[in-house]
Amino acid sequence: MTSMAAVAQKQIFAKGYLLVLISAICFGLQPFFAYVAYNDGANPTGLLLARFSVAALVLLLWLKMKGVPLPRPKIFFQSALIGIGYAGAALGYYSASHSTSVSLAVILMFSFPAFVTLYAILVLKEPTTKTRIASMVLALTGVILAAGIDLQGDLQGILWALFAALSYGAAIVYGSHTAKPENPIASAWVILLAGMLTFACASAFQEAALPQTSDGWFAVLGLAIFATIAPIATFIAGSPLIGASTASTLSTLEPVVAILIAVSLIGEALSTMTLMGGGLVLTAAVLLAKASR
Image (cartoon, rainbow, N blue to C red; front, side):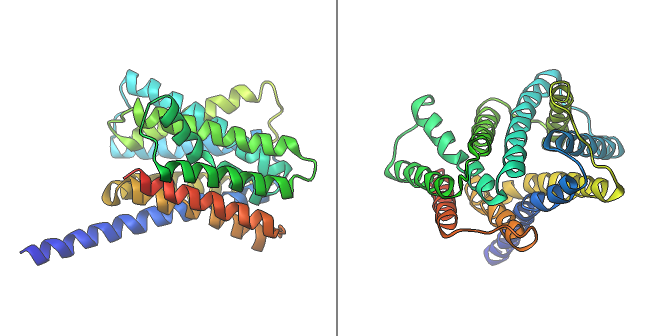
């Protein structure tokens, strides 16, 4: 009986591991779809407005088909605030990757665990450990290496990427310490809705250029389904089966996939220093994820 239970537990863990792995890979596909849409006339604001609008519509139809109720007002409001944070992170990341290299943007973006840890230590008064300090130093060193060698005069792109990291970190801190969703999928829809409304407002201040042909809109559809809804659903389904620490560690595969796409499909050149900086940032993220156990 114990042996059967152990086998069943291993199968559950393997299922969760696979789901979170799929989530990380799907999230990593974003640069490819964005590249196609940009070449079809879209800009970051227009692409993100289309992405969040299509994803929110598709997920709402799924919720209605399944009869899943929308969150209560309090949870709705909390999820909307998280959505605004995610929208800021997306705007920073997409703006950075549009004006500088995807590799640099994703490396700087994934320095967010260091910001989250720093906030946890300084504000939430969580214990300071050698692992946490070492991880933050590694992340900072990696950011300096990557940005310093690949700056090429584009300070704006670097600032956008760091803004993305701060926004994403803020959304994670708020979501993990304040918002407690009753139904993660329903809350995910609110997050997408808030993102859509955020970019609708942003389009009033900055022109939202949309794709001009069917190729660009197919890229938007792919971005919405395969790099937004699919990874959200698989992560929500898989992370409880393997625990937050393992799920966070697996999620560091996302920037690896994104950089591989940037190099192999988009044709970006990846310098040695950028590669070293990215390695340090990813190492820091893995160490911080393991330290959270």
